[in-house]
Amino acid sequence: MELKTLAAWKGDLESGALDPALQRLYGADSFGAPKLRQRFLEALEGFGRTFPERTLTGLFSAPGRTEIGGNHTDHQQGWVLGAAVSLDVIGVVSPREDNIIRVQSQGYEMEEIDLSHLEPVAQEQETSQALIRGIAARFNQFGYRIGGFDAYTTSAVMKGGGLSSSAAFEVLIGTVLNHLYNGGLVDPQRIAQVGQYAENVYFGKQCGLMDQMVSAVGGFVSIDFGEELPKIRQIPFDFAKVRHHLCVTEVGSSHENLSGEYSAIPAEMKAVAACFGQEVLSRVSEEDFYIALPQLHGRVSDRAILRAAHFFGETRRARQQAQALERGDFPGFLELVRQSGLSSFRWLQNIFAPQDPTCQPVSLALLASEHLLQGKGACRVHGGGFAGTIQAFVPEELLCSYVKEMEELFGPGSCHRLAIRPWGGVCLHTPGAYAE
Image 1: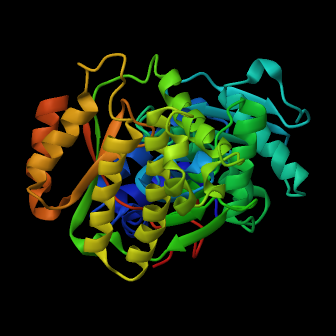
Image 2: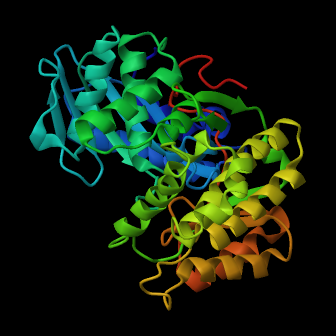
């Protein structure tokens, strides 16, 4: 890979020489090339202030992700459709000759990891240090090379917005080790597995593989969790050509005190599965489920039955959404998005928390979206639900009015216009990494 001085990178950015690469990575309009240039220039300046002794550097990027279909299906080993988005974590990186990794993330304390000690450290749980050490350890276990580096990172992936900022950070670190020390030969799916391992074993969070896989692979990604090894398929669909825009709106509510609500969803689904002698619903046939409704009623809660019904319909829809995109049927895809939103509202019931039914910002955001979309596009709850964000596919002619009205309702900057990013974690200056 090619390393350049900070001055050389700044020259390329200021002259517009990197604009074609930025446009390929972030979308044709790039939401304003000057804004993107400025973001990278500020990251280069931050690196120079933090590591003034370093000269040669590389530029890296890893995207956040959005769940397109498969709301609460992954923990039952169902189907999910996700997509990488234009909001990303970027890193300015310089290799070191020793085994020390130093990462300065903008707005946080510097993390320092000595690679001579790769075992989990209890005091590091739930920190970025744990993720970095875990990623390096897993690279080493797989027989890949590891080494030290200094990095300055900035993130445009908002925390708590359901776009998985942690997975983007993990993929960024894995991509750095891949290109600095392994010639870029480590498969993106392997980088995703490494990130999940670090989060499970070192960070202490038992996440699934969807977030890391979508961030590492890029584009639309269909995942079948029904086998021991998930089946991954990248969907070749050019979202930019359908004259719709993906918007995610933060509704201003907090996930605080909602852990019980989130935990109840998989618990209730698994309670239904247990009635059939299975651990998860993907091992139960939908036909057998509906035949057994009289026996299930009274044996498990009514809400558990409704949530199980959502799983069967939603995992089928996630598969159908991928098929619709593959055959270029965007209207059919949008109809499935609408059905997904209705199912989450009626059967999954993750739109508002029952302990405070008067507080329903997600419901309000969906109401406003349906009104503004005028029967076009589609909208649905995004991610875990109960709080956080909604997702909408907005026709181009309605985009300006949609963003304006949603931000009048939920505050300036609450409605984020995103692009589907065709590439996962990349080294920006590696030839062919994200060629047209």
